[in-house]
Length: 361
Image (cartoon, rainbow, N blue to C red; front, side, top):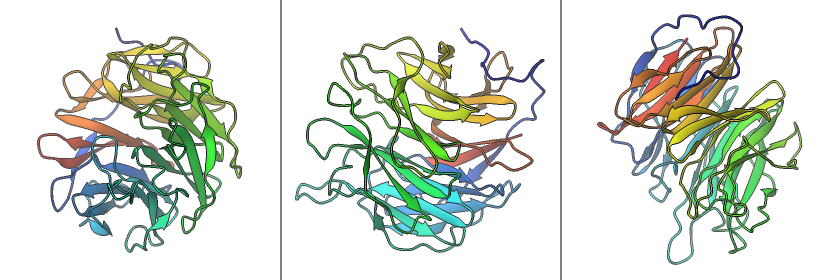
């Protein structure tokens, strides 16, 4: 059932050291999964969604423990739960948090907001609006990334027209202010998949976005790219060759990354996780959901939640996935960069409702 990943270095897979698993401190149980971001210096920052806002816990490069969390955002109207929750990105000392406010009956909310820290997460400024049209981001599904060209980029499911969801994006130089919203993709059928979270990743100075489309009844994953310094997205392309004809939203968003000129994407179709590299046929990695990707020099590292609710990791060249933790949900992976590159993955422990994190070398 399992196959080898496409991107591997020649020869057998190297023996990997067991992951270092740590508990991320939080003042109370989380109301949504944690999100992790890694700086180029290896510093790790984890966003912790709480009932009253968002805390951020930080660990210095190479550290296996976190300091006390910082209160970054104090408000109780943020959409949280499942894949709906805050996102975090870091560029140098600048850290950006983003979240969407809950839509109220009186018409307020449904807005994508961002908060900026200029000092590696120690102090935080006030919220600034990202989405231009009030209520347009009320679905609560979005993603955030720091790009190599110095910008921060956000992408979300937008319904400002009231006639289906479009994929929209916005960009910020330095995270303090945001520009005008841009249309990243519009389905010929009038709406992308209504409640599958999009994913964004840096790509050659620009970005690549993966989303679940809806075309002729097929709920497949597509990708689109934007070049460094630009805001106009290129033509979208379907990932893999198979399709999933499904009459409802599967509520299962994709993961995305790049390897050289190739887009790498992973997603769930029916009960299995699939991975595609470039225009090649997708590969069935086995039963599971919620895939995440990290692309390193040795190839593609895939993470997902297996059918027994354990978090597993399939390294390049490995014949089967290795278990990282039990009772896990909604992982988030990151590449710390730097000379001693490895993978980092955080997840919600379903038994404790706290965040845990694994460092893999």
